[in-house]
Amino acid sequence: MLNLKFGHLSVTGNFRENNEDACAVDDGGRFFIVADGMGGQAAGEKASELATEIVPKRLQSLIDFDADTGEKVTKSIDDAVTEANSEILALSEIDPSYHNMGTTIAFIVASAGKLFVGGIGDSRVYQLRGGELQQLTTDHSLTRALVDAGTISEEDAATHRYRNVLYRYLGSKEGGTGAESKEVEPQSGDRYLVCSDGVTDGIGNDEIQKLLASIDEPQQAAEDIVQAALHGGSKDNVTCVVVHVG
Image (cartoon, rainbow, N blue to C red; front, side, top):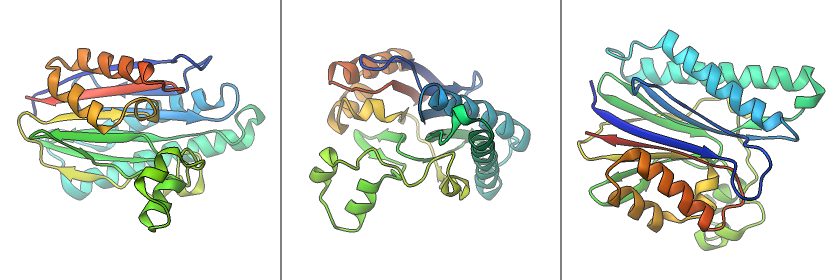
């Protein structure tokens, strides 16, 4: 079994009246999930709540965390995320107050000594290894698609008017097409961050790297990252989970 230490924090932030983010952190260190809901009134809250309830339940029923690896885990994650997507879509269709609700999801699942990392939307997973910060997930935003197509630069993307417009999220038809999980071989000393875009709205990669590297207690790191994002001007809810590999 992996020796994982972890901490987490989710706050409403300075500019929002309610927190549409949610996170699910397994006490046994088997999974870490962040969801960032969207939709009017309480709809975003409901979508992220559903994601962080349904996905953990399905993961626990589908995965033997002591033995399963590879395709078995990635398929189980896809099945769990697809079920959450279907439930969110169904509720948004039958209840007018939840019309057009949706949520992002980003996750780390730990099984049989491996980590499985992925997501849908623009919540992210970062890895700090050997002093180098790497984003392990891909944003499903229009600006990311434009950057990948060579239409705009990375610098343009940071302030582009479509930077928060998603083409894939839970609660959309495209949300049920897989969570793009990557299998990661963890190394002692690795540090991981799972976060909503409230973090990256307030601080950039350099600050994330510095905070992850310099704080040895994951709960303290999570709290300091959230505070840095708020001080950096994030206008969103801010949620993060920090995981250290022992």
